[in-house]
Image (cartoon, rainbow over all chains, first blue to last red; front, top):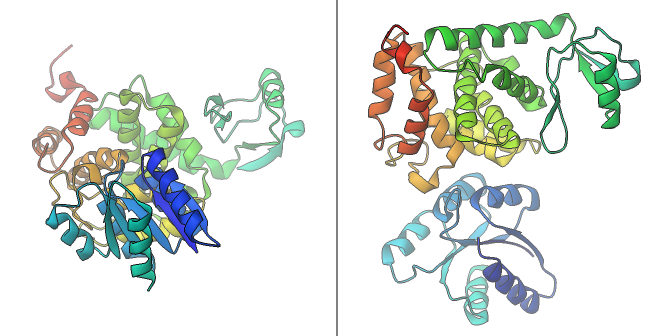
Length: 120
Length: 263
């Protein structure tokens, strides 16, 4: 399974990477720090799942989600946000095609639960 | 143009490419007559080949000369001190296969629009202090920003940004920034643009810059008066365009010439 982790925080990227490595037997992981890099890595690495931070530089997570769903309907995008309490953000992400949303701070339980939900 | 091995270079040949080192510093400009000193210098950088001018090279160069002369003469933008550098950057990026292919497919009107917007945008990039690799990326993006129009300039084609993005994205040699500029150059600061109605931080900086220049040039294509076009563009600040980009655009104008004030 191929994962792309998009977050401008190295700490969060590393945290998610460790959780995925511990949980999946075989997993390939790529990382991106901003929106442009996320699109670049999506093109070259072709991930099955993207863990996408909502607030990233150039362009932001929501814009990246819209573009990704336009060019690749198969990719599963999980939005990761600190703004979880705000219902309109949740609705917006779902409307634009996010498979799921999870909130920061990241925990192993949250990540595994959300991935299992979308992968069935 | 022809590709000549470094050992076969002779004095008197004329370069048809801009040669940069790996940091983007220009070692040889386009249109420079090759001398022994230049050959020795290029050998120290372990270059294998240099593109040399022949008859076919002159068409594009003449068009760039012609368009840049008119930008200065007619459009009241101050490029006097930067035009040599701008031309070098444009010649350099026009050798990228996807830029070359895209320009070759464009009709005269679209090619001139691509070149004019590239000249004005690169001038703004220089004013903003972008480094050489960013300037090249900006110029390449602007030269191909209308590749979704499939070669013909159209006034109301709202599908071309997405079409162009998909086309550029499929070519793995095209940087994603270049494809994104194509996708986002009709987005507006207030979210009123197309194709995605992105706003503010959802639009990358190069696309915000090009949005201003593209609007200005499209008004000029419609034969509107220079002063009117300039102030129409400035008025769209905040509503359609990033205010910082409008200020940058205005800073490249020759105000004395705009108001016909004798020097």
